[in-house]
Length: 282
Image: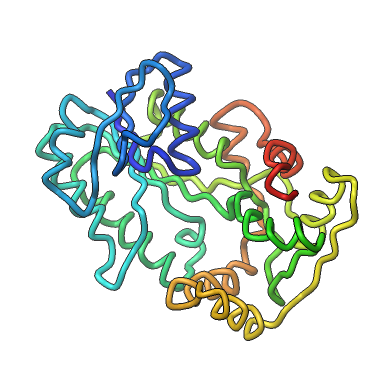
């Protein structure tokens, strides 16, 4: 039995679908399973990293776990620590942690630092482990949906990196393979898409799918910060994200062949993702 934590998230939801399609016994953990819609045959269970008492039932009879923590606060990777303790008690064999590419490139931003500490806990757990380190998710473009829909404009931050963006389904495909096939224990995989795209090229791809030109306008970091503050979306998490983007310019363009090697197919393209999600852009 495989337990998928974060089962309603971008990667977890795709992973549940793929495992179910392969007739792999899978249990999907979420805080509010009554609100989730999982495929037929998937066992749905309530579980919350912040409520350790919910984890034994979620882990009962499980031998492999997809570890997708909801985030990192000032106290670091509390969720991994909590899950590992419960997983040991339940007799779990293998942990597959969703991390971030910055760990492998020495990034020091708060988000990457949290994942780095989480990786260390998983690696020192005494259980078999595999680490998945994806770069920028294609779903990042959701952040531009409002301005594209209303103005056919993308407001990007000056210095935003050229990015080998990855489709969450490709991350899930790798996770499904790692969870169900031998040969991946003790490995850390960097995962990217198959092409490195500038923000301007990303806007062109959205425009090509819509059949309309998308303007790409650069803002300074201060202007971006001010806009998000105006919308009430500022604070430490935004600052951490902006710092991650600043640092990731040094590596986010690098292309890894891990998706193709592990899944035996080329990564999905940004146009694939845009076509699937065209409705969000108006």
